[in-house]
Image (cartoon, rainbow, N blue to C red; front, side, top):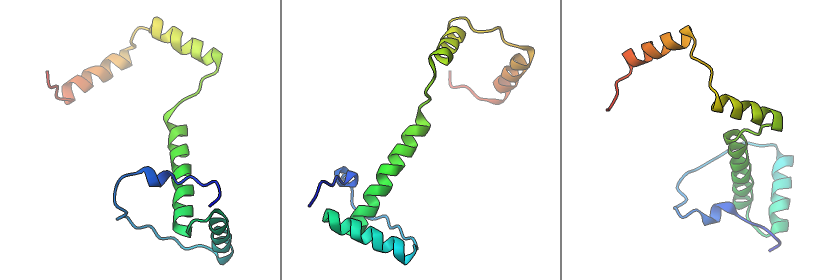
Length: 103
């Protein structure tokens, strides 16, 4: 087998979930060929590629990258927050009236 890493192999749980999709014959042939070249079956190849892409997509959406200028603005705002506006005070009063607290 060539250099192939299956990220799903490290997940310790039974394979009970099922996924199915339709695709074009040409796409399936390319997947079959790539899987064969790596010495893995098509399911492992597709699951591995999909899982890597899913993790990458989730990671991209879970973090925000700021320029140096934007970082300075955010830190400045945290160090010296603006006074709440009347609209914010009203919204907080409404929130307090509608949301139960556990303390």
